[in-house]
Amino acid sequence: MINFFSETDFSLKNTEKFKCWIQNSIEKEGFKLGEINYIFCDDDYLQNLNLQYLNHDTLTDIISFDNTVDSIISGDIYISIERVKENAQEFNTSFDDELSRVMIHGVLHFLGFGDKTEDEKREMRKKEDAALEYFNRLHHK
Image 1: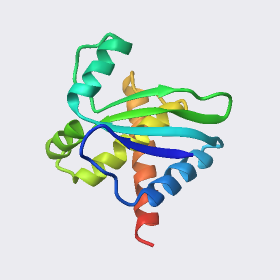
Image 2: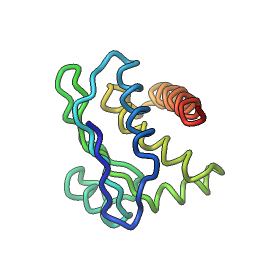
Image 3: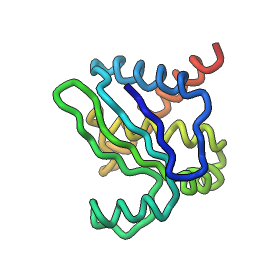
């Protein structure tokens, strides 16, 4: 089950397409969907979580809390809509594409992909790109 919540005035459109894409992305990696909660929020909300749980006093676009057990993927993914908007401008991409990238990024962490080293970052980016390509194919059917 995939749930979407908002602690800001943002509301995700086409939730069924996102749910289908995320579930298929999980299953393509050989895992099963448990429960994933997306919580859309602002910078302050996410920075408070970052301080409280990770002891980091920095702005970030995403924080994910992994509750995966064995091959059942579950967790909470908090996304700052403010960061996504700013990053989309910085990276010269659309808000929708940047949001999709961040959404799948959290799931990829749950699937075991990291982003601490340069090699991990390259692999993560390849997985993100493949997932976005798949989403765009699904989305345009």
